[in-house]
Length: 462
Image (cartoon, rainbow, N blue to C red):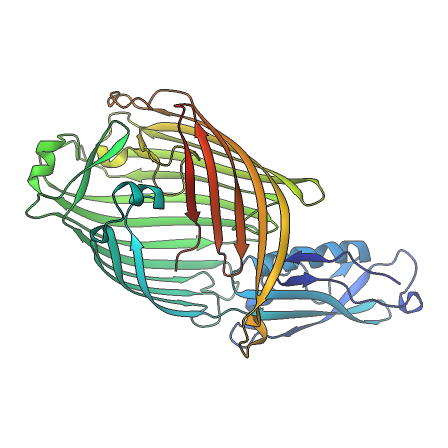
């Protein structure tokens, strides 16, 4: 009997159907791909499924290479975030012609959800500020993924509370017949009474005694190009108007680097991305990278170039044991930038584990993260829903030890002790991974300041 080794991700299994040796043609002659049958795609267009497959009907391919191509197809389809399950298998032989079966289980694509989230950088920062409900955003988010069955996305957010925000975005990655060219358009309006006007003692400094508060209006249009399976290009053009209460410029004259409390600036960026991992949202094996260049503003009030890069690599060192490394670097010039262009460590997903309590501003930085993960258990919980794609919720739990290091350079703001200084942290924790790209992280970390603590992170946010 001939089998391909199964590959399992959550509830996804890829395997080659067993076939008797007597049914297999012998010799060194390659096989020819015959029919490719797709099942289970009730919403998703068949050509969107085929866009992720590295072979076509009529291709000639040797059997070992075909088995590898099945695994590539499974990874590509699963990483579209369109499906909870994918099976790619040989269906039948007709001499040297082979038919291929692709079975998918589609996700839920519509998420009209109430929204409730603290505005602080992480849960630890919200706890430090007393779990105040006045630091919570609430409202309504409407996300419609796979809007027309072409993996396009529609997003409408209506948020109030700490921040009043209206956001609209539509993304169509496959706008032409070649399925290589796409676009994205978006609009955002945000108003806030409280503002982070500066950084003091490595902490965000806020004020809420403002009359006009702060307003930000921006619009963008993007062009995307995907020539193959794993490489993505994106060009973005945006226009932003920011207004702050004049009192902010008294508290921090370098907030805008100008005496005006209203600035208007364009932004142009190019990003190159590459993905070749088992699971892009939680990569254990393979690698992915991103490089970009950005120009923000064209006047004395706003003038910044940024060059950045990020690389993630993972290996299986022992059975169910994985080593992961991630490197990040950024350079902004000229070095004399306003405060709003200096946010680096501690914002978004750019942070050192163990230093989540702090923010570090600057114009240049590098960061390296290392982790060893060991899978402890995987299991699934029944949902009792009448849905083939959602009859069970899968979970994987990993134990993890890690060590991070980094450095931030700041030419002007040197009173914060973590700038212009080599930084390092270490610790251990657990990762809980489920479907719909949900990842929960529990860390117990130590830093070079002699501090230690528990930190919680949730990757997914609808």
